[in-house]
Amino acid sequence: MTHADFPAALLHRLRHARHIAVLTGAGISAESGIPTFRHAQTGLWSQYDPLELATPQAFQRNPRLVWDWYAWRRQLVAHAQPNAGHTALVAIQRHAPQFTLITQNVDGLHQQAGSTAVIELHGNIRRIKRADDGVIVTAWTETEGELVRCPQTGSLLRPDVVWFGEMLPPDALDAARVAAQTCDVFFSIGTSGLVEPAGSLPRLALHAGATLVVVNPEATFAPHNDVYLLQGAAGVLLPQLVAAVWGD
Ligand code: OAD
Image 1 (cartoon, rainbow, N blue to C red):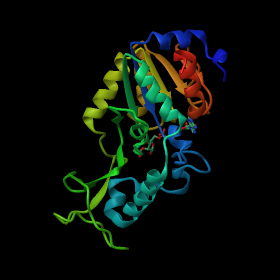
Image 2: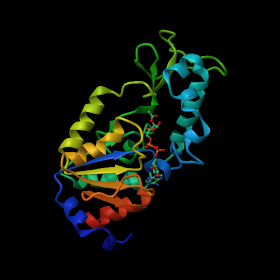
Image 3: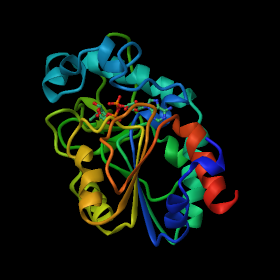
Image 4: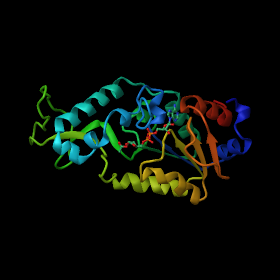
């Protein structure tokens, strides 16, 4: 897409927006080499069963299997670099009078790119907590094949991510809902929108009167008057949009 391909009304709306809110999903990190969840061939859920890996019951059944799977993903994330999509959101934060970044991602790449005050709806894979009381633990030792425990209390350790069937952090969810209801432009970037409650945020924003901008190579949103569907990769489209709106 060139500058001329973005609708002039969208560029005008963004230039004059008082509050821009953004929801991101796995798609924004795809160009950093992190697999999404629902891609038919490469998606994590096409190769692994969420019920075996991403539920409290799975952890009760086989804590070591769950630990190892997250340790593998932590490695992937540790070696990944933010891409041009993440960087473009840092630029939008710089330009917008008010900006809220809400992510379903657990990879921490927004913060690594320089985004601040990121609302993490599903936790962060880089943090480890005790399974029994949720206290964050920063040091532990691992022995091949053995359960990984807190050196202080002996409790099992787990990633600080939200599993299916668990509550989202209430403060994060509240802040996300308030942002959706008070922004004038809401971006939905790289998410299938299939997981609740995050999946409802774009509609919440739309119903509250915001302009919705969807960035995704696939059609995830039905055409609608107040919705701009930007079809393509976030790492390509977002820098072009930033350049078209703010000239950088
Ligand atoms: P999904 O895997 O469901 O969807 C990823 C979306 O990103 C798809 O709609 C793709 O078309 C799109 N996409 C792929 N490449 C892209 C690119 N380069 N630029 C823009 N979009 C691109 O991932 P999420 O919607 O994030 O939850 O999934 C939501 C939740 O389901 C995750 O947070 C996770 C998972 O189970 C938990 O772990 C609690």
